[in-house]
Length: 456
Image (cartoon, rainbow, N blue to C red; front, side):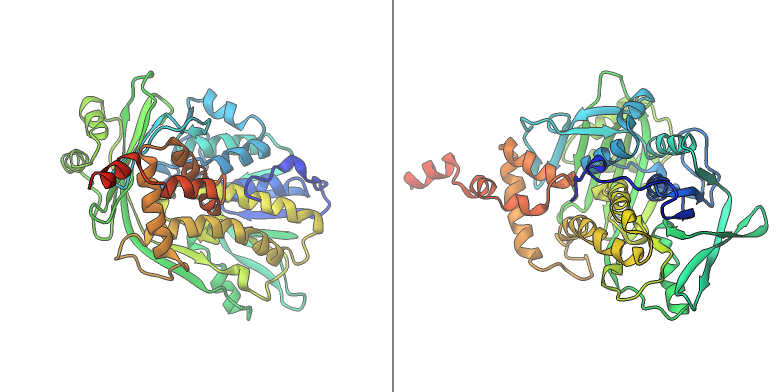
């Protein structure tokens, strides 16, 4: 399901599901949902509280957009289906498409993983540029209306029918009601849908909360056009600090420093340089010293990953759906958010041909495996740190020991690098790492170990 393609399924017909759908929230999850809904509704209205810029710049009300964001392979392929030519447009505006197998210095478990003999394309750009390309494509699409500076108040509810019939919002100080056959909550981790459900007598989803207590700080520096490598340094229990240096548009690198469980990422230049100098790879500190800084340092806190278990509910109002971070908000270190949002939209596309009655629950069932794969991958790795708290997936300790060995072996085995990077990219399920071929490479004796044993 993860890499199911849009063109393999019957498209809905415009108007088949009703006259109007409303999407509350204009970030990537809401924009992707709007694109899919435009196949089945005559009109799709996106309500966004911020002013939507006409250029690829961070929105004032979304400070996290100034932090680096990754477009994993599952998201890249899905966005190219939703918006044909998406790759091309991002690159035309300065984004980069590089082979992750050979263009990334990835430091993890005490060493740099080996390059892989594989084609693992990755799209590098800022979050504002990704959103800008999608937003402009929606503006050019018939039947989609983007309304900014709109503050969502609540849903209109027909209690007798058990159905949401529209939304109320404030537009320029005036309260407005908009009728809709379907309302989609894409408001992110601050979603008020659970509170609304409780207030109206519906069951509410249980919440899984995994506390990671992360802060991450980002600065932009100049990048020589010929320098296009990325650097990823994973935090480890003995060093709960990580870093990334990602090439983006405008001949820039975005440099991010992360601190977990009490390590507060820096907000001043001197401390930023000190943190970088203490990293196990010199590349980040070298670039920070040699290149011009072209932005202030932006710090953003992320206390915990949150998953609302809508997939366990037995009742849910018709006319309402939830998507993106409003279902699950992941540790940003793994860069899963935008890609999962795109996959959620694909799941919505697959359910629309069956109509909107019961859509909310059907969508949760379809989205569940997508979220579960990303959640399990991220959360298991979070529990490498003893200070992480929350519900621990079954088998976490055993699987983490296995991953320790796999990644360590990947430092001189490009096939193992390829295997775990394809999982990281949401391209293959984590169970693929248990394939006999991978198990053999992880556990086979090294030649040096055999020689040493024979001479003992």
